[in-house]
Image (tube, rainbow, N blue to C red):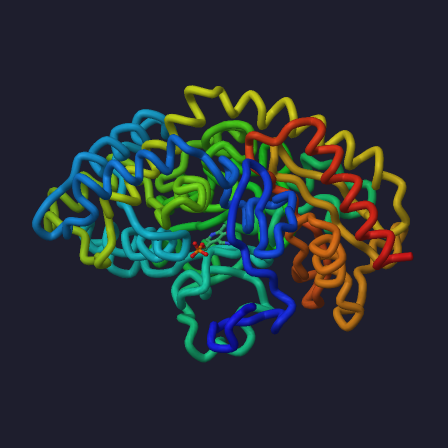
Length: 443
Ligand code: PMP
């Protein structure tokens, strides 16, 4: 039974106790199996019983569990940094390890600030991000994030150095008759307007998720959007930070999501899939020119956490990358991901309460609407997303339904982000069970 002393306890005594994992399934203490259709929160990209990763962790624990980076580096940290630098887009060769996504965002924000400080451009402190985005729950990351629901009660604690423009979500906000291309240009140009409004000499960075996850439900940008964003950043000397904490590490079918948009940022944040749930680890991958500025300046980054570069976590990261590469799992992400997307489109494409089926690779989303024609969201008090989660769990399926923010109101979506090892039969099981859960809640 769950203990009453664990905090948080979102669903009170109803939450099952997980005791085991078997590939794409989690198993609770009664022996019930749950198909993991969302990797928890897009974390478990290798499923729950990857022997090679577990062995790598055990081996590292036997050799050296931990050494503080103020005194030592370690072989796993060196190896993982090499591997990530090798795979990251051109020019991003410096890897700062942290323990999760929020920490990766905090490091990037401070690094952007310190970079301009070292360059003598000390007025550059503003950061522009987007509404309906999520970059973490620590105060800097929360201030950058643009989810009004998550921010509301903490507003007095959030820095006013963060500013927001609209996200890129054509299905929701494209004007009637406006082409995707025109829409993409219009919303990207908001960045330029905001930079000019603030004064270019005061802006340090623009931060965005290439494919928006938790707050909107796997929404990819329209073609050309990020290229224009990159151009605008370059025009005004603003750093581009891409948050791939959820959509990175192969989830969209390429190791880094931004590869598909043809842009190279100045920093990429990764976490979730890097440790695949086997260890907590994240990283801020940094462009050479930023690193060089710090090296020629003060010579160090004014930042740090106790567990940065944790050897056991880094060993897990190396083993996860080994698995993704040696088993060619990105091919499965693309093949079974497109099979799953087609199956979702077939099952829900005409559903009266599904407005949009979208996403890339194994990062997919359904937008739930009260009215398909007007795209009107459900009222938050209907609790549609949480009810679907509950019905799916009862039927042995994990999906990640969340209320995002639509015009200041909460709307509902279902995020689907299964392990990369998903089979077509498991994709069918996922769609069947999700369909039953939606029928139970929406009929
Ligand atoms: N950025 C994005 C895009 C995320 O999806 C998340 C987690 N949902 C975070 C940052 C924060 O990561 P963490 O929960 O590991 O701090």
